[in-house]
Image 1 (cartoon, rainbow, N blue to C red):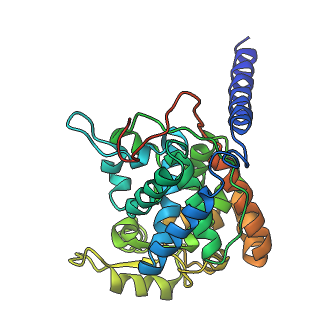
Image 2: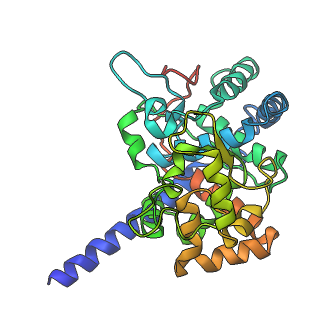
Length: 323
């Protein structure tokens, strides 16, 4: 009887996830703004492009912003809300302290409100901008499903649910599964690290006193680990020190996976993908075939963009505050 009840619980959970995914997809439409604001995507692209020309860090920051938004309450732009006297927002959460470039979304929203008042949600702006920074950096382009509403709740405490750079593969798979995403989505979306930079604080535990048996994480390439130890000494007085997450950090490509195969992943959670049979074969496939990676990354971005879509939200007039 207990076994039957457990199986029924598992079935119910899986069914609920599938139902949520199908409902989210049904709510969204690739042509959602075709009649109400046909120039929306052009305005967002222009804003993101101009910002990226002035600051090359913008693409990586926007892509990270999208991930961190969707992983908490779904893709509802809750990451954009400013704290209030009575509430610490997601921006205040420790994993989000280094999330930057919110002004790019603000600029796009201001232009969209002038062109099409009270029409485009901040959640859709983030989602479209994330696609645009990937394409601008040499990656794939896909049709973004639109029609998201903006959420009204943002809590710093909930950022504890973001996957940490110290996670092992089991923890990563569990975290992604809660959002209806599988192992292939995990490996594909981790490829977003092909853009960007990390401060020493996110990986220095791999470089000093790693375990009782090893001072340095043994999964790390020796030459690479020595290079990082010089950049991130202990104690480290340079709080800006760190490392790019792949050797072509401003280009969206599959170099990230090739570096993982060589033991040169910066985060422990990245390098762990090679050490586990459930994910290694996917890393190998993406390292060999960039076009396959592009195809799977685009598909997984669409799936992530469908997470937690809400019907009873709002269209914020300003992305930093609820209406």
